[in-house]
Length: 281
Image (cartoon, rainbow, N blue to C red; front, side, top):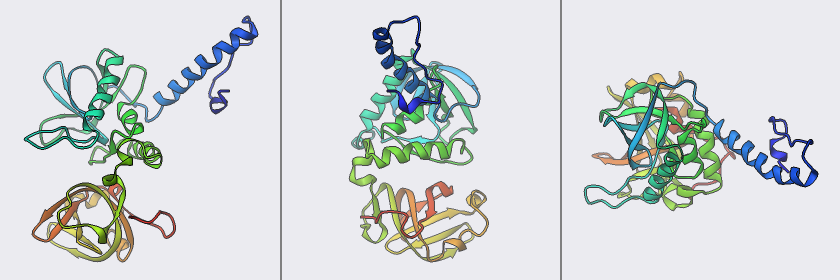
């Protein structure tokens, strides 16, 4: 029992409790150990501000008592219905999951600001933690209620968040059980596809313009990297991607050239090594 927590400071007291009582203590100690392990995933480095929440808009956006809107860094959750459009899959469940977390601690959060503290909508940007140290983004990622999202310059904990997402993705939790969240081959994309997708395909051409780099996948999709975002990529990009099979994630839009996805950070675009990934559908 509790074997997974050996070496992590977990012990069952031998005295003065009788053996039967010690048996009853085992589940409680295991639960405490599990809770501490979860709380330690992607832990905070500091607390920038302590706040209280008065409203939950959706799984990643909330309203604070002083009227500020807060957008959680590092994740994206499905959109709640607005302007006549229907809610996306699991949008209501993601909002409910966030409410449940907040209600456990009287809707109080400890915030850790990112390098950029406001987005172009004027919303506050921060990572959020409960009083027991639990990273809110981690809990939503674990449940499959969110996808990992990197928007530079707020890149703190990106690898940690990606690792948590990978587990939920492998176990097909939440969103990862839906067809739209499965990897799709670039040649299988249809002209009216929109929204978040994970696409895999071979780079057939690379072109440059004054404002950006354009990577053409086999099929109708073009990947655009703005020149101002090249600072986020390693030297040798994009030449190192020429002819390679890549996986790209993001929101597919349409322009005069067809389907396009904008990429700002290499977390959303990487080369696939032969034999390292299952085939896209």
